[in-house]
Length: 299
Image (cartoon, one colour):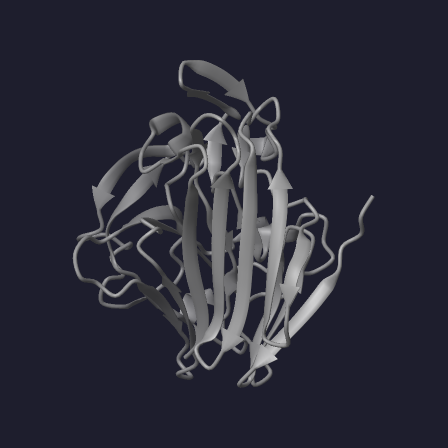
């Protein structure tokens, strides 16, 4: 069995530590300041820095239907009975290209019983004066269309001297998904207006619990989420038009001492349970590519 390898790339004050296990981003600093929660050797991991594909977030009961066929994937969120965050987080990716400031990983993901679609992934990380850029491309090597979605799972840190309750978030979203309290599965879509989830003009999080998907506003809005501390330090997550939703999670962690010290910001191509709802689900045709990009930078 292949073993994992950690890789560091750096440029203009940015340093990123990546790992072939899941092709995840384990650490990102700017002039020594942590911009994301460092991945710890914890078996839970909290998905820190993971790549989420071929679906982000949850599939209810791990069961979905596609093209008239029903499929079942592993339920790995046991307490809530969901299949969470795709199939690539525990795979060893190959390094296909590497320089001092960039690395490209690749993964061949053959069809399986629960996901009978053969995909090839390419993932490029690059650091420059604008921060850490991440680009994921999925190629359908099969002979039929494949359902697909993707995201990333960094926990942003505005300033380690404070926590989520003191930070201000600005998020270009007019609507959010309501969820049931037991399984965090979608119930409906509501306007953020006159709610604690209206972060369009910037708002301090305080003690608000968030583990919800926000619909990125239509029109010429800046496709960026910013998180700022009272010190003025912060982090920005930029994303391209492929990310139509952003999951925000306040990392409460049920009393774990690391709770609410970082904020998960996950720009997604589709919302939770889209393998069942079909909402913004990508249909990846045979021989076609689908790309999605993100950037994390210091403020």
